[in-house]
Length: 298
Image (cartoon, rainbow, N blue to C red; front, top):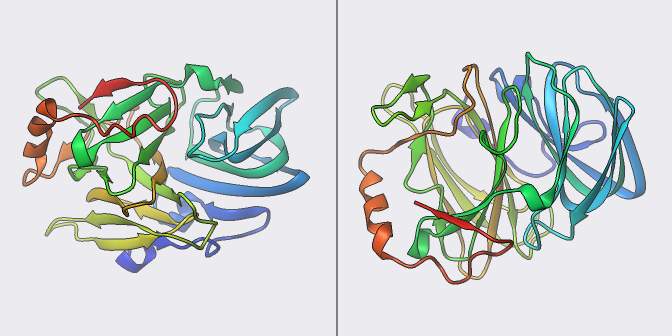
């Protein structure tokens, strides 16, 4: 992937019913994808999932999802900064109709197994705090490996208070291997989809996303991102994600890869991994959690 192709501003990949469409082919890789659907009042869209498993995740709004005759009602939320949301899982080779009003993200992954369609309740989403001080952030682990079963798809939400850094220290997931501490790493393609508090799609305040590689696998991205922008991470270290002072930052992480294990285990940039040890004696940013009850993890 060319560095210039990694940052996708809002509207640049719109096609058909999708306000954003990132297929594996568009990204230049094999597994991970993301679509965003914007519906007016009582809007409706029907489609087939093909060889991809998908989620329907309300970003702002609510609606219903009918998948192969099974109907799910999504309560949704006013915005990503207001609440954790419920969601629906769509298997591969399914026929789907979404009806409602608002913006809906559809993370996806090319899948082999066909699992049943399912509903994910907001009350069951694990909400976690990570880091400390100016590296404090909140994770909504709605489709983390330990929280929700999929074939290959992994997806989480991250909320970063204004002025803080997240996705830090910079890290990468590039190999299928087991680490000395027992963590199972998986090679992953990754998508970051952003919203900035106070912004509208394609306009308003900004945050920043860094992606960089190695001598053997170079990539060099420092993207100024607004609500609706997307950054692709085919490989390399990603982070920090930077929230400008005064503007909370949200991103949806979508990850998928070829490995048999669904895992988010990563390798820190060795120049910066030491920072984790300093978090044990620092308080978590008192602005967190922005939504919901939490657990604490470094």
